[in-house]
Length: 360
Ligand SMILES: *Cc1c(COP(=O)(O)O)cnc(C)c1O
Image 1: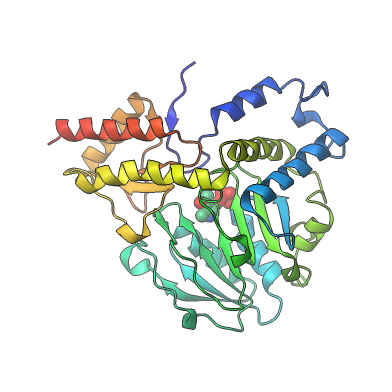
Image 2: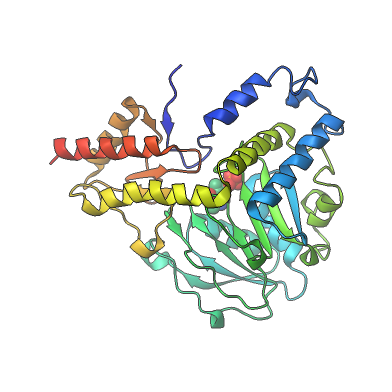
């Protein structure tokens, strides 16, 4: 067996120990004589899994008791609709910081249900920085203000959260949840597709402050209603059982490795290896403003498309796959989520050095 270092933006690497454990339990999970995929979601065995997953996530993210944790389906993209459907309680207005492709999609979707206003944007420079977000920009009567904490495609990160006063802050945290410590009480809503730092695609984690749910728009589909999902323990219908089980294994691992703070320290180290190299390279460049650099997604470019293509191809041959950048940015992108070992990043940096020396 030969495993590659997978630098994909998502779905992305999962920790090998989690995959091995899942393999070992594939035919018989905890003496039940069944795979988790075959279990009734109402069984005692499965209840332990979903409750365990929630308890672990609450512990590692230090989620206050007045927040609901929901395990939903449909990816972060479905949350682009669910957030406005559930949070447009009064003015039906929301303020957005527009920092890339994903925030753009969140804005378009919110516009279907109310007023979505862009209060700050980095579109003028192809989303290579995070715009200043003074408190005065935000409408005090908005139902919520929305940010994308980490911009997966553009490789930028909010280093500080905007102060939105009493307006609940909603965050798409798909590509950096569990990668750094966040104070959950700063948010009204956090949502994240699982396929970057949590587990299999499809599963979507929602963390929402209790007082914000239950006043959803009349047209909200039952399955999209946070209140109904909360009242039913994320089991209004059959939940994504297996994906939640893998998420539980990942949460366990994060806890056993020292929690989110330990992940953050490791992520700073991994990203540092790559940024230090980029800052001193004569061939490769980072398009991102230094003060907005993501710890998870690191785009970089060589001087020509021919060199970019050659790099991606040769890296794949050397066991480092999915380094091609997003078409809107070009060049390369290394996504180095929690599950990417330091050795993988070191191998990439070494490969970049060799490539640079042979293409001077
Ligand atoms: C990947 C990603 C999405 C889309 O997630 P889906 O699960 O495919 O809907 C949305 N927002 C961000 C920030 C992402 O990284």
